[in-house]
Length: 275
Image (cartoon, rainbow, N blue to C red; front, side, top):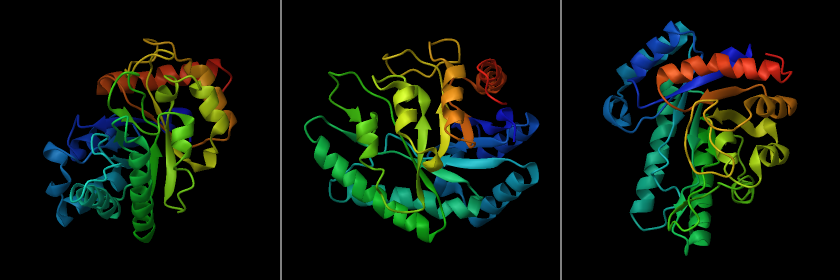
């Protein structure tokens, strides 16, 4: 498969899932990422008939679907009752996975409130192990994403934004548990993309997510060229580690992400990457 075909689009909440599949087919996009939390795509709106329709549309148009949970849902929740709700939320994504014919589900490690970091990490890891075990039984695949840093003086911080924090979860034992590498998040921390790529076993990476930003800066999702991330060098490093999976554009408008696919392929080719 060409590099262009491997670069998909994060539809998020831009379109209903049916319209998203039609849009992808119209523009020859092979891979889309959808969130099932709100409005027309709320997971509670999917009965068996709608799931069957969506799966049929995906198969007919040759489009692959990834599901993406909401990072605002705290996977590291430890409060009674609320934690049970988080478990149910993750199971609902696993339950719909096969009905829609999805490829994977992106999940997160949650967030902490500075003073309770260790408790949050432990609670989150236990929950991710449970959902990995459940996903394995349901023949689903979950990918844990490295998230973005927050300002140093913020009270709330996403977990798994550094290599050390992300590695804490890597020994979760299940073939249903892999990783989603967000390159722009790595660009925000001292380790940088090079540090993450060196540490990663890319046989465990299911996708690489892309946006531009500024080195050691703050969280923004810019079009390539609007920040200082060297995408040519990034592709060279990642492809050099043997990665042949999907990339997912996650920035701007649908038109921005669509146009940038060609820009990214050109930058990869200029860096000597086989496209």
